[in-house]
Length: 166
Image (cartoon, rainbow, N blue to C red; front, side, top):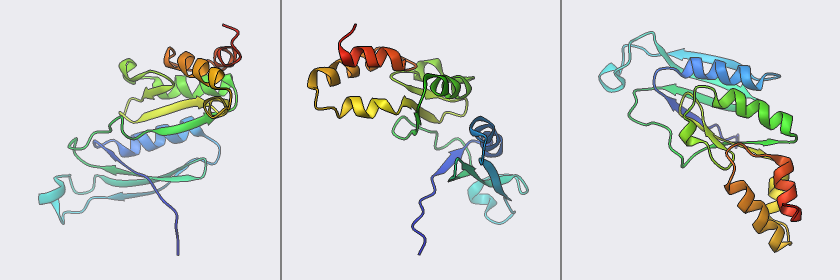
């Protein structure tokens, strides 16, 4: 039995473009693995042009995703986001720059951003989890308050806040 869970992301006709963009951002072992196309059958329901891309299957750092092309009936919402845990500020800056390009600046807060396809991402330092579960209640509060005042997270600033150095 395969217990693997594959997120399926609904795009507005640009699933292949989005998948190729994400693969370029994550690099390494990331790749597009399969592309299927709409048939004439069911056109009265899917309303897509036969031969156009139906589904793109892709991997980002070993995680499989499906990108489904549909109409704009179901846009992405803030209720679902992809989280990237970053070890360094350089890594965090890289993902923030690449994924926020062309996205909605209004969707940027507390380490969250919306990309040009409308998908929400949390670009967070791995150390942030240690801050928010720390037994040091005052440090937790300071780190959380600092995070709430940031768009792109600043690891050094969060560390200073946690330690009470600001």
